[in-house]
Amino acid sequence: MDGVTITTRRAAIAGIAAAATALGLGEIVAAFITPLSAPLSAVGDAVIAISPEGLDRWAKETFGTADKPLLLGGTLVLLGVFAAGIGILARRRLAYGMAGIVVFTAIGVLSAVTRPTAEALAALPSVMGGAGAAVLLYLLLELPAGQEPAAEDPRMFGRRRFMVTAGAAVAAAGVGGFAARTLGQGSMVEQARGEIKLPAPADPAPGLPASTKLKVKGITPWHTPNGDFYRIDTALTVPKLDPAQYRLRVYGRVERELDLSYQDILDMPLIERDITISCVSNEVGGPLVGNARWLGVRLSDILDKVKPHKGADQLVGRSSDGFTAGAPTELCRDGRDAMLAVGMNGEPLPVDHGFPVRMIVPGLYGYVSATKWLTELQLTSFDDFDAYWIPRGWSTPSPIKTTSRIDTPSSSAKAGTVTVAGVAWAQHRGIEAVEVRVDNEDWREAELAAEASTDVWRQWKWTWKDAEPGTHTLTVRAVDGDGETQTEKVAPVAPDGATGLHSVKVTVE
Ligand SMILES: Nc1nc2c(c(=O)[nH]1)N[C@H]1C(S)=C(S)[C@@H](COP(=O)(O)O)O[C@H]1N2
Ligand SMILES: [Mo]
Image (tube, rainbow, N blue to C red; front, side, top):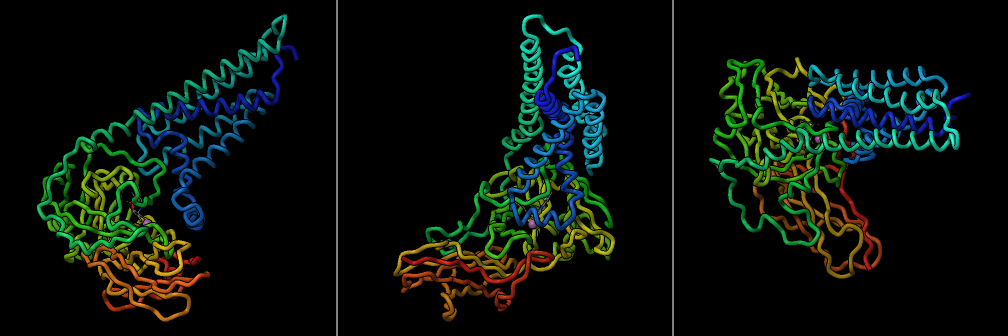
């Protein structure tokens, strides 16, 4: 070989640098189209979309809400390994490396153009990223190989040039890509959100008696602050909708279609209600539940305007990213406070929780009702359309299971008097009683906070007077507003919600 020697290690680094450059360039180009078309987002989203229901559920159960960072991290590690391989192949023959880049570009392009919301130019970020990677690989591997070695120290010359080229490319793509992510659409939407002044509700939330909230250390706060509210969705990159451009289309089996702007929605009479929402994937005792004060338009007001046809028994909410959830039309207008929410705990919906508009239906799990980033309401039937989670093994809408949770103590307590406390929920039926059991003793009636409405959870507490040293098991169960006692029968989260009783093991000292 007569040019500068290229070591395997250097070839691997060249491959990784080319991949990093491709991702950064892709982010920059995507900032001018839509963040969802960036190669990493597009591929991640495609993986979520095609992953079989079992894998999806496994990821949720194993990683909880950390599944997205893990998916991204895993994708990056895999990409790094392949990129190093491409570099090594390119060292043997540049054409091999180029072929590898073409394959990866194709994966990016295919992922981007098959997203349900793909824009016309969705392929461009991956194509430009791939082109950038090809150029860099050529500069790093082919040019130096053909070049005359410098007289004094051939290795030195080659190494410096290599490091500068690779470093500059990765740094430029990295800084540019990061800037594109943070200064692009996302920050514009955050700014627009910050400038919104929500109108006062025509029908404010009913006043709460002081006794709605218990003063117990360690109990779940009655209102969940927005920053602590659980988040569940399939979005790897959260949709950022500009309220100025926002449209909500109401169509399907209706007498009259509607097309509303964000302002049109704000101009309608707004109601304000405390409503507890929960996720069907919540394990017994789990954290996927929260209570917020929502501000929004009654769904029945919207439905009265469009006049659904007979047989349009399903109201499907579709989000800007293609997710769908379908609720029974009748239930959305049976007098309950089903709404299109624009506000959450006194501020515009946070972007993570569906800004600018989402659906909330008291008494239904989120996956069949609570579409975030809502852009379409479609009147159809359950026979004609399956929403997102239905073909993935989850059932059509069914009532939320009666659930109770012990918040405190969590694992240890001091002997003597111990306050046991938590929350219980059975939205739209309400909670009538909560009972606590120590080990295998009798069930004891807990004290309940006042009921704000049947659509919210109730805090409860029970004073354990004579906690003796040792390990004890505390168990809780609730009775719902229909007088039904929470079942101790254990069921998994799929297909329609977990059952069983929440227990904690407490070491008393
Ligand atoms: N667009 C969109 N909306 C969605 C989802 C989703 O994946 N995408 N997930 C639903 C599910 S399963 C739940 S439990 C709730 C969670 O709402 P939160 O993230 O505001 O708590 O949102 C619902 N709305
Ligand atoms: Mo959910």
